[in-house]
Image (cartoon, rainbow, N blue to C red; front, side):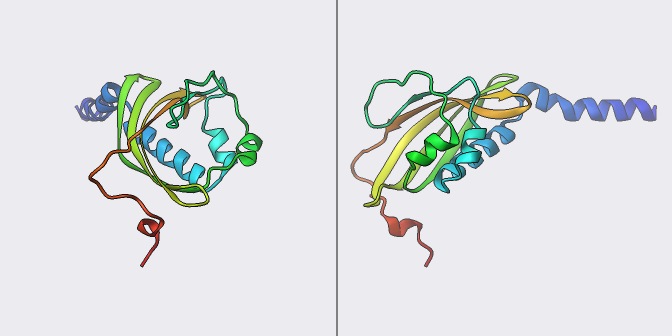
Length: 157
């Protein structure tokens, strides 16, 4: 009877993970990736991208990009300047090894600390046991009647 109860407990604990996946692990990977971008930690950023490349669309209104296989050195040559944060991330399981993630990405960018606000959708896939970025789409979220982000929003008082 004791073995039966232990088996039921183990199966009961495993069912939510089997049904719903590990969205917390995916969201942790998303946070880590974008923190690395902000910190200009190119090695981490590169390590968290699919080795078969990443499909991207930027928020500048340009066309979709072909699959890119960038390296840490590529990122170092073209650094992102600014402080940008993830807001309201959501992960939706597509399969055991794929998640759709969406969030808002807001802060200041460039040498003049220009306000930046975009909607982001990404796809994360599991490669060799870890979650990596496969697609990213940034859609400008400029709209009136709301707070305009400034550098001081991110400074500690």
